[in-house]
Length: 115
Length: 110
Image 1: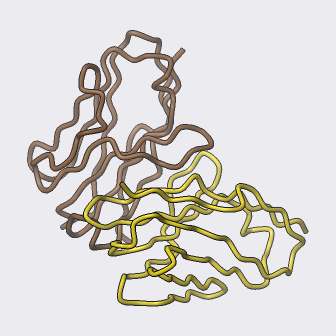
Image 2: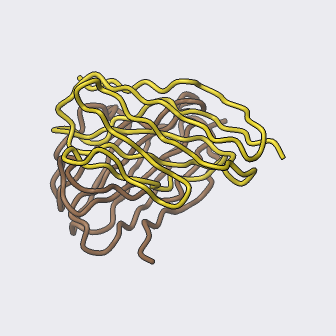
């Protein structure tokens, strides 16, 4: 069964350091999302890609976060420098088409702890 | 802006009980309503997807309904089992990607 792959599963980093997360969506899915989930809360959208283009990054803290999907397949989310408040689960999801018209599938997430 | 609310925040039931989880949303112009399960420290597993033209979907012991006019969805779990213990999240999508509620944390006691 096709899955959204994410790595690493867990990451511990010191504040002010750089950290990167990787996501490989389900093959053929044009839309890729990065969500952040703080403990006890629902996931919140950080960025949405349609193929290699950013569709929505209005909630991405652009002073320290960046995201790319260069070839329209896998994607990388980077934080530099990391802050204590960035500790959260980072979830990647993909869907066949965008604008929420098709089912979204999520990966297992990357649990980030900033110390 | 779509807002999603889930009630209750936590629920504890004895094994075998039937139960209902509630989800309400503010913008009725949604395309899809998805229910997810999340185990501690894990990602989200899609349980059911209800498209705007549908009223309900069923998968095994799970049944989800959608009433766009009232802005509500329910997830019904029949004959609950300890393995159903998890957090259940609902999310609606329309012209924007999925907007999530905070979830209902379910504990099924053997």
